[in-house]
Image (cartoon, rainbow, N blue to C red; front, side, top):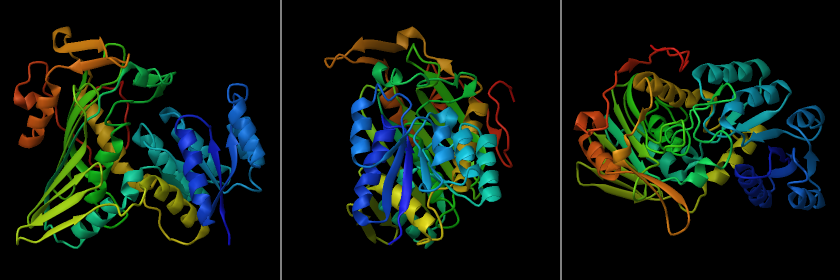
Amino acid sequence: MRKAFFAVVGVRNFAADHIKFIKELEKENEVKLAAVVVEDKRKNFDIVKGLKCEGIEVFESFEELLEKGRKFIDIITLPTAIHTHSEMAIKAMESGYDVLLEKPPAPTIQELDNIIKVEKKTGKFCSIGFHMIHAKSIRKLKEIILEGKLGEIKQISCKALWPRYKSYYSRNDWAGKIIYNGHIVLDGPMHNALAHYLNNMLYLLGPSMNESIDLERVRAEFYRAHTYIEAEDTSCLEAKAANGTKIYFYVTHASEKKLDPYMEIEGTKGRAIWDFSENTKIVLNNGETMEFGNDGVDPHLEVFRVTARKHLGIIDELYSTPKNSRPFVVAINGAYDSAGKIIPIPEKYVEEFETEEKEYKTVLKGIDEVIYEAFEKKVLFSDLGVKWAVPTKEVNVRNYVFFNPFIQK
């Protein structure tokens, strides 16, 4: 049986997860971890030693991998910093490799469009690591929507409270940054930690199984409670899709409590609820109900399985691509255009303290309740009259092709 041979750029943090997922799938005989890139062999001595004992090639740089890996590497995975994504993906495809690129695919729409152009030019593909649209529950929910069982989708909304400590923002040099070393990053919850759940909504509204919905208009608000970061940690978004569906998204890293992503879909024939554990419940207006989960399928593994099978010719289409990620990037860029700037939360509304676990935590007072209320009423924070909230403008994102945060539109 033919196998797809992978190389992973890096061995720590999420690169370690890539290695773990590939090794897990090796049991199925369709994939093989063949190489890694390790720039600091001294720091990673034990990891490198173990990998070499397994017969895995260790390259000292991405450039060395590109030059020497052609004879035995099929797919390069890029669990790298956000601002490196487009440049590295393009270099890999131009060097003759298929690519698995971590989410978010690129900070700007022009970078993403360049990836799409290079895919067409080289004939290579770039699979995007939005693992949640590989989830069995999401794909089954989309099938039900496409069959028309929920009728016309009027609105879709999601909320999530994921508090993040100071250690989260100190994990690397670009965490919590808008710009890093002259590169656009946009490392807020909407673009990074909770990106999957905005992308899920855009995917579910798409006109076919592997398409997402284009957007027409976006309105968003960005706020910062953490005093030591540049990016927003709290945001809300309202968007109108090309088919008229309204999209609502409410997220924060500065909450008191934790709430995993929770999504509701309202259709003319029924209603669906999906949560982070992949429990899905559909209640139709005729009284019929459906409930399902993920049947034990790990969506993280599906990303690698689908990518390998596309390379091997077993399947024709990837699930997550630069093309169907485009509405997500448009939503993010449009949100920044709409917000105009990130509003610092006044000190009197913020608490920063050390937890019993010796973690430094930031809480925006009352944000938990604000998000719950905004979610129920389908409005933005400023619409509620929240004292620290600032109204923003709606922007037209139809035919959107360029984003620059330094240009006030």
